[in-house]
Image 1 (cartoon, helix red, strand yellow):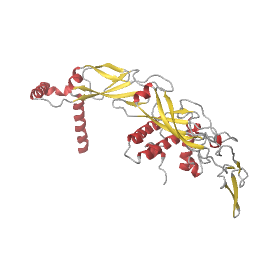
Image 2: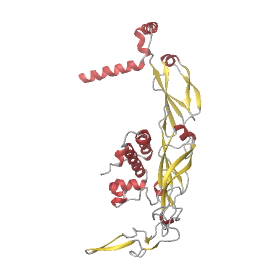
Image 3: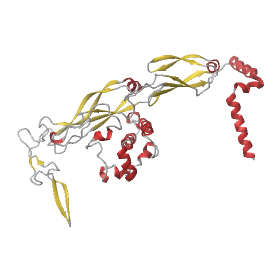
Image 4: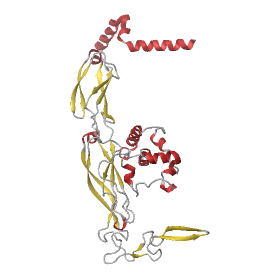
Amino acid sequence: MSKRDYYEVLGVRKDTDEKDIKKAYRRVAMKFHPDRNPDDPQADSKFKEATEAYDVLMDPEKRAAYDRFGHAGVDPSMGGGAGGFGGGNFSDIFGDVFGDIFGGGGGRGRGGPQRGSDLRYTLDISLEDAVKGSTVEIRVPSLATCEKCDGSGAKRGSSPTTCATCGGAGQVRMQQGFFQVQQACPTCRGRGKSISDPCNACRGQGRVEKTRTLSVKVPPGVDTGDRIRLSGEGEAGPEGGPPGDLFVQMSVRQHNIFERDGKNLYCEVPITFVAAALGGELEVPTLDGRVKLKIPPETQTGKLFRLRGKGVKPVRGGSVGDLLCRAVVETPVNLNKEQKALLEQFQKSLGQGGNAQSPRQTSWFEGVKNFFDDMKI
């Protein structure tokens, strides 16, 4: 099945900058996160599709290759690009662009044992933990070096022998008409060695499936899409090769009150009709506790109140963001007869000069009138 366009997957244009791509990914990732959609069988594939698009479009080199050649420029199975999560230098993908928070890089060494695959784990955390930091234990299934054979694949007391078919090269040449084709040795499957007496525990593979419990320290200020690298916690390399790394990707859950945009937080604050007209004071929540917010007279819906320093301190440094509270004037409901009579009396008290108390309504009606007058011309 053909892959969808990466820009289409994230819902962005080709000239979208990295900041807006990250916002788009955060939105799609939260929508299709498997933990939030347990009954949707397609959620997991859509989440992975969005992550794949994000990986490419946030890497300048990969994005340039994708813009020029499409999927063929970044998909190794189509003859281009770098490897995915199953090998290669994974740190090149996430080094500077995603800002791995801990650990160093390190790919596959040349001329030595093959490095194990890097792993990715999506960590679902609350907004509070993302802003203030936390320590979380995770369980990660992976391939670990077999302890019984020390990763050799051969039963204890024996050892692998050089493959007689390829002479230890792991590759064989086959003649097809005028051409010679080099392919993996069918006997040893490219390993260059043959095991006559395989280990019973790993069945000659040198690695076994194992689930480990790891402690992940989440630093304050992380956001959806950020990754923490745990060096050496990936899959064990074949034939005793060094292990890969584990990349823990953050996915911040949607909050009931606050919405995050970079280092700033947003929330809606409902205020009564009376408080909006006369002014007043009310308590609003922040991640550090409650604070007093002064409401000036004649406040309209949509007015933003900025509480400086009540946002998020970015994980990569910089000033603390702000909390922006959007006023929402609430219309009274379930009024009794007396209350309705008072409002009707109030309305009458405005008289013909009521337009002065509703300037936006007056200007809106004037705009509507001008609109219809222009249509008659």
